[in-house]
Image (cartoon, rainbow, N blue to C red; front, side):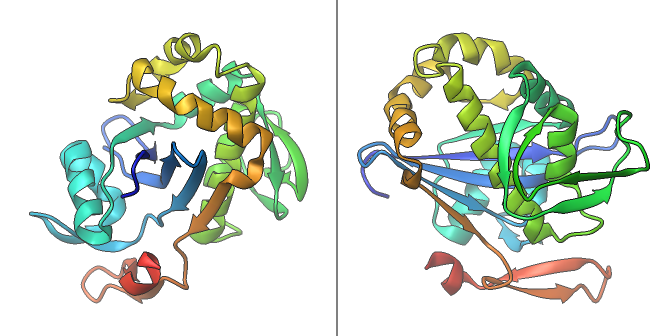
Length: 248
């Protein structure tokens, strides 16, 4: 890896009591501290990979099965990527973060209309976009997870829009100068091994991105990088990675 690169895996869990969890949002943020740039790469939850010591399974099972250590070894084995840190949150933690910030503003690339059960939405449907939209925690969670009228690939795009909205809102809170305060404010809503002292050296990158958004590059592993199959034993939908395309 280039000198000064820091890889942080951002995970969204579908945890429910007594049901375990899977990480249906898997977003790799590679921070290049010397160039002051960031690459965001979203991995589909159904990517069927070799999990060291466990055989083949979906990539969204590693964190629940063996913690961050197994997730690290899975990424190294399949993609040659070393993960330095991770940040994991669940439904409630995500909503709390967005609501504490007073909501977030996103720029939706497409219009999404789908079923929802939010109490302040009548008729059982919600709609967002295209264009600028302000979302509270519940609506942001619906926007990130909705899948009845769209695909998992579209959900991955929306997850990146959410992350950019969160970043912009944090920067409007002067996140660079208030990093320790914000860390303490949100640390109970996430599971992570990254400490405030390790975030401080990354803050100049955040300032550079705020002044020049083109420093963020967005990528998605989609149907151009994986082949869809149906398991002959379980009938489950799986994506077989095309490693050459992913590495490029």
